[in-house]
Length: 397
Picture: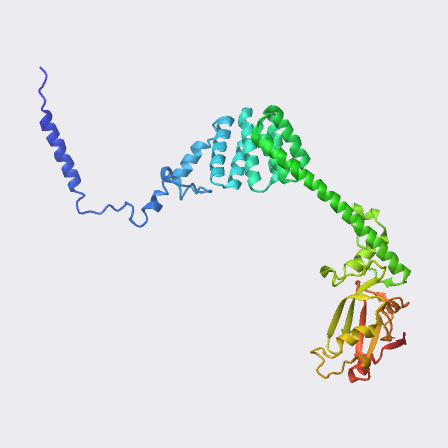
């Protein structure tokens, strides 16, 4: 005969046991609990509650994560399973805009060499997208080319390739890729928009190239006319040593043309567009420096007409208003001596103030250096003038 049971009595006994169990915790603080001031930080250490996983998982600091990682990337899994895991990891990094880590994950997936062609194409195109956002347009293009080798008609790879070609300024290739994509999907909106954009940029680029060609041609003609005018006046230019050229276009230009650019258009004031030029009447205008060694000062005349006399400029510069550095008021037009120096021979040539610039520049011993004619100005009979000229070879102009 079966023994009788008393459910009510058993429930009462279980309740008493629970009460006794809970009673022992009364008045005691749970030592391993989260503190109020850092519970969110502690929660973030638990894998299931993490908002973002650390990039480098330290088994000591994050043993749970290390365990999960070893399960996810178990080498006993098939290449397809591992490649998919790396793809998902890369997608998560991409979503977080951590494109460098995304590239690493997609690369690891490709290293598995899985037989799933669709997955391989996705890994290539996703890595291309990450490279694109990193600004590595050439690497991104290489990835979409690899993706199309596996699946030539992959539309996402084609679109990504078009974007890369546009960034690389290869608009012809961008248009060609668009046309290939539109053969697959004639109404693809993004391809239609990208094709219009690439075509517009190609036209602008071609127009700018034509303008640059015309501008180069115009400058070359002007340089040739300038060189001819200088040679007709028998003006000598200091020519720096020939520099080895890495531009093959330079080989088509004459050596004199290259020299004129270096000596005239690369002078000390060239960056301010103060260079010798030929006006519509065939006259030369030079940027000229007046040097005052006594006070270590100088004046710059940006466009000195070749037929203007030196006295004309001196009368203006040292007229009623004297320069602030001339505290002794010694610099007066009729009290000045002008010289030019033959640096090679060390001779000084006296210049008559009523001479024109053209007469001085045509002197057999005058050499224009760095595109800027230079004249030394001293106060006649001053102690500094005597000291400066002492020991120098003086020549009459």
